[in-house]
Amino acid sequence: MDRLSELELLVKIAESGHIGRAAEALDLSRPAASRMLAALEKRLGTRLVERNTRRVFITDAGQTFVERARHILHELQDAELSLTRKTLDPSGTLRVGSSLSFAMHQIAPRLRKFRTLYPRLDVLLETQNRYGSGPDDHLDIAIRTREFEPDSSLTIRRLATTNRVLCASPAYVAQRGTPKTPDDLLTHDFLVYTHANRAHELWLSQHGYHETVKLRAVLESNEGQVLRAAALDGLGILVQPSYIVYNDLVSGRLLPLLTDWQLPQLHINMAYRTREHLPAKTRAFIEFMVAEFAANNYERRWTSNMGLKTIDPGR
Image 1 (cartoon, one colour):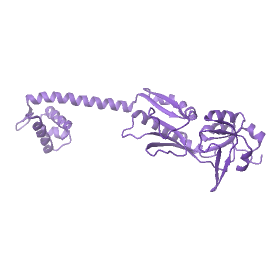
Image 2 (cartoon, rainbow, N blue to C red; image 1 turned 90 degrees about the vertical axis):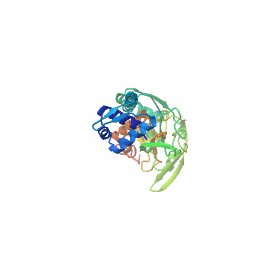
Image 3 (cartoon, one colour; image 1 turned 135 degrees about the vertical axis):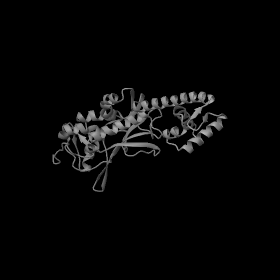
Image 4 (spheres, rainbow, N blue to C red; image 1 turned 90 degrees about the horizontal axis):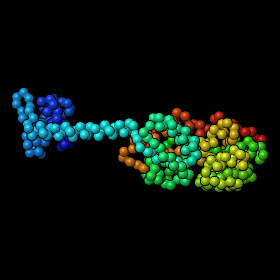
C-alpha cells in the first residue's frame, strides 16, 4: 500500500469529517478508502478514526498523527514545487563542448538570447577540435561535426546536415585558374584541416561515379579558422563545411569550385550521455539550439548552392 496515499486520505478525512467525501476528493471508491484506512490503523496498531451514523471523528492519537502527516505532505509539496521551478527556470552552470568554428559561428552569437531566456543559467564553453568517442565526463553536452557517431550508446540529437565545400578566393582563382575536373586539383595548392577523415585526399562523387584525389598541402592546421583566413588571403583551396564558409561564399569573398561534384556530407550532432531523466539545463540548451536551427533553415542553406556566387568554369 502507498503510504503517502494513506497519509493523504487521513488528512482529507480529518478536514472533511467524512470518509466518503475524502475518498471522492482523492478519486477513490469508498470501499477502497475504508480498506486503506484499516490498513493504516493495523500497521500503526492504534485506532485513528471513530465513526458514528453521521460522521467520523479523529481520535487523540489520530490528531497527533494527522499533524505530522500534514507536515510531511507540505514538505513533499514544497520539494516538488522547488523541483518544478528549477525545471522551468534552470540554474547553475551548463558545460558545452564544440569546435572553435562552431562556437564562434553558432553558439557565441546566441548566448545573449539564451541567457535572456534562462538568466540563472551560466555557460562554460570549451572548444575542442578533436573528438573522442563520447563527451568528456565534465561536459553536459558536446556538439560535433562528423560523418557518423562511432558510439551507439550515446544519445544523439541531430541539428543539421552540412555539405563540405571546395572554395578559394577570387585572387587565387585569378592567378591559378579554375579547376574543371578532379584531375585538375592535382596542380593546385591546398589548405588542409588535419583532423578531417583522410585529411590529405578528397573523395569526390558524381552520379554514382567516385574519384579520389591526393592533395598537395601548402598549409596544414588543426584549426579551421586559420585555414579560412589563409584562403581569404589567396593562399590556396579550402575544404570546409558549409556552415563555416557560407557567408564568405554568399558575399563572394570565397568562390565555390567543382560544384557538380560532391564530398561526403557531415552531420552536426548534439551528443550526451544517456540518462533516465535529462537535466533541465541540458534540455533547455538542446531545445533552444534545435529551435534556432529550424528558424534559420540552416540545413537547406548548407546542403544547397542556392544564393552562392558561381564562377565561369571556362575561366
